[in-house]
Amino acid sequence: MATLHHEGRLRALEEVEKEIAMILQCAGNIVLELSKDKHNASLLDRQLLQFQSSVNRVESELSAQIRYLTQVATGQPHEGSTYSARKDCQMALNRAEYAKVKLGELGRTCEVMLEQQQS
Amino acid sequence: MATQRVLPQSKETLLQNYNKRLKDDIKSILDNFTEIIKTAKVREETQVSRPTQAEQDHYEMHVRAANIVRAGESLMKLVSDLKQFLILNDFPSVNDAISLQNQQLRSLQDECDKKLTSLRDEIAIDLYELEEEYYSSSYSLWDNSDVPLCEAYRRPDSWMSPDSSCSSPSEDREDTDGPLAPETNPQHHLNGHSTTTTEKP
Image (tube, rainbow over all chains, first blue to last red; front, top):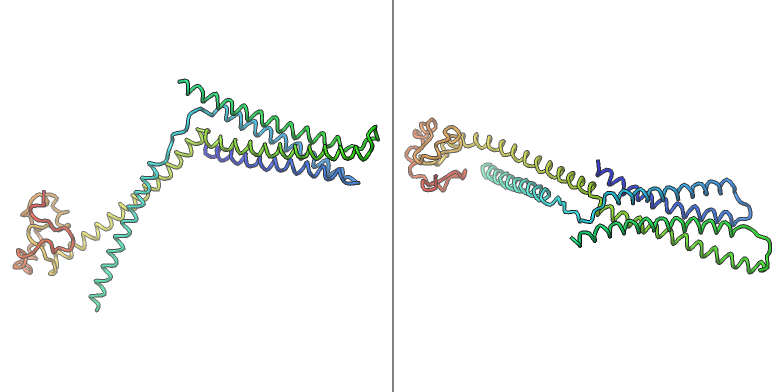
């Protein structure tokens, strides 16, 4: 569950990055529209609403992340590791590979003997 | 102990710094954007001539737009720092990721070993039948001191006795291979089960 939360937090931060880009894009579109002789009021309103909502979302999401990290963070480095399980699994795969090689040799030996018998 | 006290303070300071950067950047974006919109308003001519005012407004807008972009980039850097901090210091998530990975690796190892064990059992059954066939045929070359696998399964204590021999197959062998059995060299056995009397426990 927490792994999903971990991935969810990282994905939320990636969404925040897209929102920041959206903020800059909306600001640029508004200034561009204002520079024209005739303004499209509806477009201006939409872009402005988008701009405000993006700014609020970015601020709230980043504040939430910082609050969570304030509760969770310690001063110590994490000392967990998957090395032992990974090594055991690697040894099991080596055992399987070795058995496969030996069975291959046995099969080839049997084939050679059968060919000799046939000849 | 003093070193341990310093580290949490640096974490606290770091997180407070993140908060400050967030507030400053958001404020910078909003203020500069608001000022650009205000500057875009057409005003009546004041003491400064229109071209001069236009030039000033143009420069101001340029600077404020650059400030907005800088604040946006600063926010992106903040997000990157937060991602790094999260990966390194979110211990509950790191613990769960490690335990999940360990679980997956152990299940793969168990599956691998289970398949190898079943393969071993199947091969042992085939080997049993092959040995039974071989040692009951006229092609086998064995002596009374050696016990084939099939017979070893029937009599577990046969490994302890160097003089043990097969009961039922031996009668058949005496008919066919009796004169040859004592002259057999144990090292010529194909199945690898040959042992000398000195090697047996």
